[in-house]
Image (cartoon, rainbow, N blue to C red; front, side, top):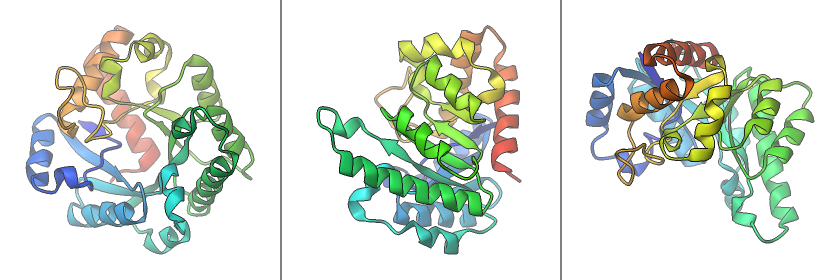
Length: 255
């Protein structure tokens, strides 16, 4: 089977037809899903989904870096953690919005929010789902300032091999999404990344792969991502399926 390790099934994009979305995924052999929070409210809704679909959905509790605008108190996550929660995140740093100006104070707010969630992950022995955009050096600096490193994944990895080596050195996985079917830069690095370090994600409803780009993304498209990786690594898609599923089970302890 395949596992979609990052799909926002808790977003309004799936409110009307979620049972059909899950049914279509099952037909595509995508049978387990990790639904991450991107704020306090979406973390709650991720957990509600995990409680409603105990056989195939797990939740992650987290605040996206842009949530610094809402002054979230992530300590509430500690009261929400139960057997349905397998990770903390998505959390991290996103400097894309600051392109063209310094924004030191805003960046510091993101770092504080990120570190608070990392410490929750360490305390509760949970892996982290890291969102990183235009901020790899600062991400590594925050991680290296911790008393120990958590396990986890760099969700929707979008940088080059030099940053990947730093990710790998710290023991993290990388997640690949539908943009690998059209992002040439990512296609050039995938042959050099071991399958043992890769997770499959849709990031639905975003980043829909070719040939469905421009429509809502769904977990049923995970096999298209696997096929692209198989093509770039000159291997069979069943090998990608087996190894990435094993990675997801190892990291997130899906039952």
